[in-house]
Image 1 (cartoon, rainbow, N blue to C red):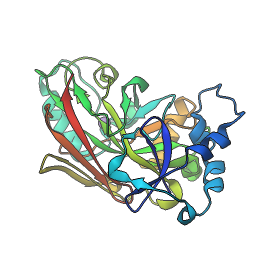
Image 2 (image 1 turned 180 degrees about the vertical axis):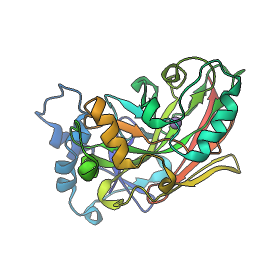
Image 3 (image 1 turned 180 degrees about the horizontal axis):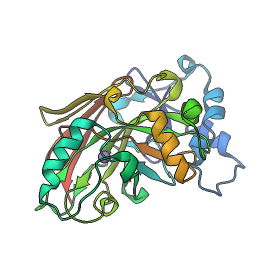
Length: 285
Ligand code: MN
């Protein structure tokens, strides 16, 4: 099932380029539920929601996908966790870029650990990236993003995928420079998530997905998640060894090689196998 958030925080099912509005079903599921705690309420109740939706073919009155404004599929994650340098070819390209920087970071994810992006940086594809510091280098990074479905604390690799609600395309937009990584990557609008959440049952093997990113008509990134240094299972084990992952938390799994600067006026076209495709506009701040 492909679940989207759209327009004024409505919830929908995407099927054959149509959106079926299931906001009323969401509201029914959430009625009387506590919104305390760190979990995103919709993601925490996804199994009940999916059960109530039942057969997607029985939904009625869709609107064209092209007519809606897609928001981040997760409204309020408690954390945006991200993997640095998780593809070998990207590690060597970044060693060239950082040769001019004063900050030295370990290229080994096991030593470097994960990092966090501010949740306030999160947007959906319709909102557009607003570039700050246009005189400096701002890069695109396309990544497979996973959304945690149930509370995960010190989870082992063997059952790590049981904690995944679904998958999205993530863009980890990055200002290059000497500041701390999380500072540069937490600028408003620098965390894109979309175009929708594909429930985990549709992607049994997330470690074998082709992902691509083009800028305007030029293909920049084209890789497969099988080339990740840390697999999806290992990333969940690694991050949950340090902090509890709550329903709705997002893990950006790292970008492959081909990152390049973006400028206002550009259109980013990102695509991941079995998830879909999204276009995101780059604007000035
Ligand atoms: Mn990244």
